[in-house]
Length: 246
Image 1: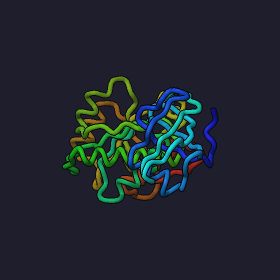
Image 2: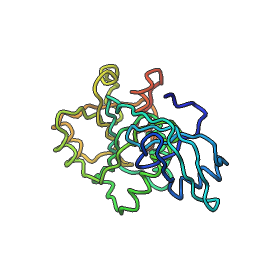
Image 3: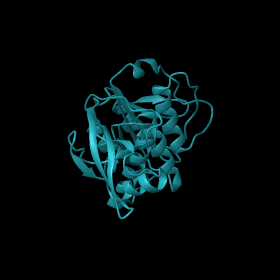
Image 4: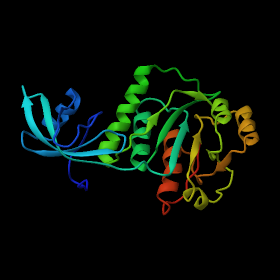
């Protein structure tokens, strides 16, 4: 089954089996009816965010607000082999929305809010749920069938202690470009982006001790979200140029 580029893609947490029926959430039903103006008999695609893809037909619309579907065909796509984990100090306001949206489109597989010395984080479960919704919307727009995980905040030291054998690369100006080619051909990496003002001297020492690699993104001083997007884009879109981080 091929997901057509212009076909609408929506979300359903548990995809029914072929020939079975299901019902969309209130939010997804609103998107189907109001945004796409679809109705009974129209076809669309559903994903569960875990590799599942179903082509379905709208079987009924109740009270102009609940969409019932019947599954015509269902398939599964394997999880991407490369793991691109972004661990970043969250920027303020709408900049966080922009960052998560664009990173998801580029192929981020996990996002971890990073608690740094110059950037204490105060956040609630509602914040994490809102961030997951942003990633879900970006998945539907970009036709991704695997929803990025959004983790609880951790300190930089926690991340270093729990790294295992994964490669860690931190954005830092003046560190030299290094070679991205070997990273592109690897199983993935954790990309670290510090807060405005950068990592503290103690955090820099901890990263050096842990063997973190450095990435100089070029000649300009970038905001947090721009640096994170530039790092991931440099790996998944090799033809892009270079830039420098804040």
